[in-house]
Image 1: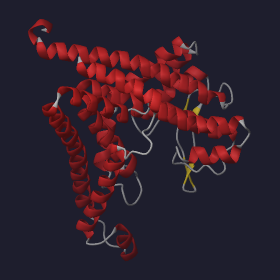
Image 2: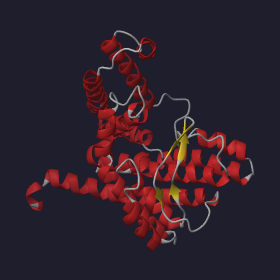
Image 3: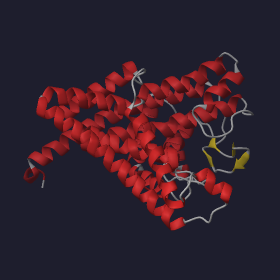
Image 4: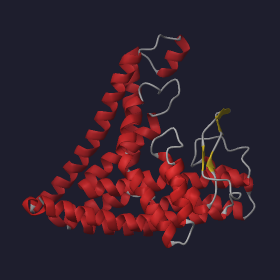
Length: 341
């Protein structure tokens, strides 16, 4: 029951405070470790930095890079889980109340509900003010595509896609893993997510060393992405958006993405708002063709950013209730396994 209370309190603190400014976030530490280990492994494979590998045009060692990528993923994910578990164990030895306070604080740091809304709404306010150049700058902090030439509708679309996708891997998925294993498992998931965002790119440098991280991220997000889609469909019904459209587009376009998980929530958002997401985008000056998600019923407008954030918040509250129930069942099962057989 303590974990349920910690989940609820951590969720509320996140809604009130957002990211803890002025503090070093654990994810920053995870990111630093990933970067150092990646560079160290590249140096171990080639005896020099990646920059030197390119300059010298050294022969690629695909197998070595793949093995190092798997080792990198294992060390970061398992290491993160063990460190958080160790901290909580020491806290428990000192006083149970200290462990509860720390786990609550950790859960608050894992979640990103307010942060996602706050950052995405910066784009909304720039568009509402008619400041398209400012909106392009703000959206550039949230997406990897080129933003210099985007028009107002394209900027809004990029923001809606960011909110919809991150509803799953920034809020729903962490809550799901917290419900299963508390803050340690929640942070282990954040480690997977951070690995995916840092090394799981199909560029020349990372295509092999990031393979394991990309696959593990797909596996870890398989259930949470679909849970997020269901929660978002329920949220669209509560908000009186087009729930029939949400279900229709989800069933039709939920795999319209390179990732097996990313289009799950994007499809629901597109259907609920009667807009079309996806399509061709420019990355580093090169067009990348992607399938469209949803029907082009009407142009995307900046108000769709606010509507998608409403879906985000209602989905988050619904998921909190589901995850609390899941934790309750798991705790009851572990204490009384015979009663549930």
